[in-house]
Structure formats: C-alpha cells, structure tokens
Amino acid sequence: MEEMRRIAFEIVLRACLFGTLAIFCVMVGMSFEPRLAFQAGGTLTTMMALILFYKAHEALTKPYKRTEMWLYLPKDSRPPEAYAQWASATVLRETYLTFALWTAAIAIAMWTIALIFGLFGV
Image (cartoon, rainbow, N blue to C red):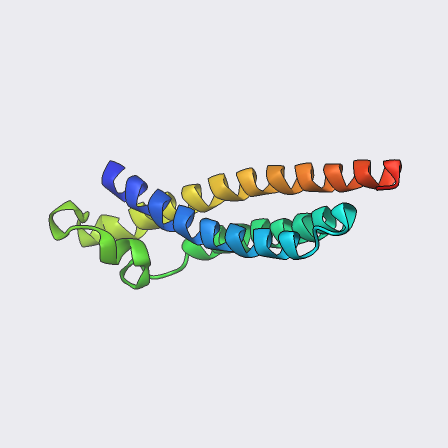
C-alpha cells in the first residue's frame, strides 16, 4: 500500500506542477498589474482545487485498471483483484484531497495578497 501511496503522490504532484506552471505563466504575463496578476492566480488556483476535489470524488468509481497509478505500479506490488479497487480508490482519493487542501490554501493566500494590493491601490 505504501508503494501505491508513493506512486499516487508522484502522479498527482506532477499534474499539479504542470498546472502551477501554467498559472505562473499567466501571472507573469499580468505582472504589470500585481493585483490583477494575483486575482488571476487566485481564480486559476481555485479552479485547480475544484478539479482536484472532483478527481477525488471520481476516484471512488473509476475502474482501478484505468488509472495511471495502476500502470506505474510494479506487477509484484499490485494488490489482489478483490482488494485492488478499494485500495486504489482509497489511495487516490486521499492523495487528491491532500493536494486539493494545499491548493485551496494557496488560492486563499493569493486572494489575500490581491486584496492587500487592492486596499493599498497598487
């Protein structure tokens, strides 16, 4: 199960890093207006958190053989078929929810920074 957690963490982390790179590029493009850049970053990060929440919900019903985690899992580390659906759904759900929580916290921070810039008229 720990091998499954490690692989799920790596897969979700990679996906979040690609999303973060896109959000960062949008924010750099709007860097002439800091408040607008952080509003855009907060909006896009909130969207990423919502997508992660959706993926966590979807993980409960997605067939385990169709997940990326199952493809990366070595054959000798795979759980028995009767246990595999529950194990993969649980691990993926926990991982998605963990990243959704972290992403939501970052979105709140970005919205707070945008609010501070707005209050100071920057």
